[in-house]
Image 1: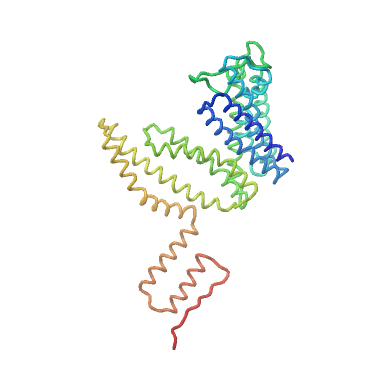
Image 2 (image 1 turned 120 degrees about the horizontal axis):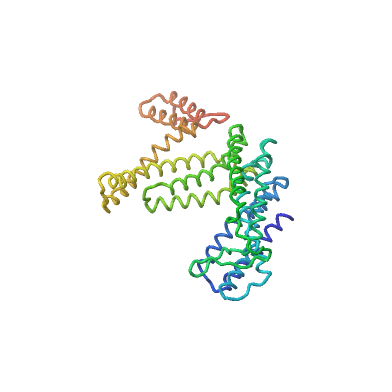
Length: 398
């Protein structure tokens, strides 16, 4: 029942917000952004409902539901309040009440995602009692930040005006003269406590990962894979060199995939669904990440270094670097795949070497019985079946 209530409430709130946006004049940019916003947080709400239904005692279900429902609560009122402001009319009290969560819910969402999700993964409990000194100060800090933000004099809406300007409405619980949360003198010291809590949560993940084995190690691999995608995307975007369009597209795609993949991977890890397939995903991800990094360094060396050393900038040089990078993709991928297999998928690497050696022997070996024995040995060492047998059809009359 709780899971159905989560899904039903989110669907009702999201549907109301979409109807209000469409009825408010069809501002397509805001509508597209609103749909993307709802889809992202709807994923958290939906997966939270699944975890609540399948793992009733696990804390990650309520945490995911919180991440999804808090934005949905303020979405209809915020949308309607923004429409009334743009029309120049007075914003009714009920709309301002529904928009009120926009003053503080982001702090709750960020604290849950950056601190409590990694701190409580995968079993829903702290690594040990001493980690309470990370969880409790962050909880107190979030309460303080939310409190000072919730009583700000006005509410800044998420929707922007036609010229990109910020929109505001009067806070029904606001105190006259109270600044926004970020401008309050208490925000910086309390925010520092939350940041330290996030650092502590990362330390908890490292400690647990080093101690994990078996199923728990696979769960952490599922958890860390989308996190690594986001880290790689942020690193690429921070490079001080001009990036080709295809690199920016891949980087943005990796960041989006990491954000979407985080709740999905955590849900799969907790439900232990297809748990051991993460090794193959990691293998492919590492391979293409290294290939992309290698080609990016090559491109930067060909395009950027001549400009730095001899002040040479040419469209022909950029085109040549792009063609060279495209031509090098396949051989670089093959070489990197072999290196990654040798490090992360040793069984596959060893099996490939055994098959290659057997293939080379087939070209020179004439003894059929010897080849049959070698074939059984190759199958046993690569596939590792419980039993191996070989049937050979003899010619008639022999």
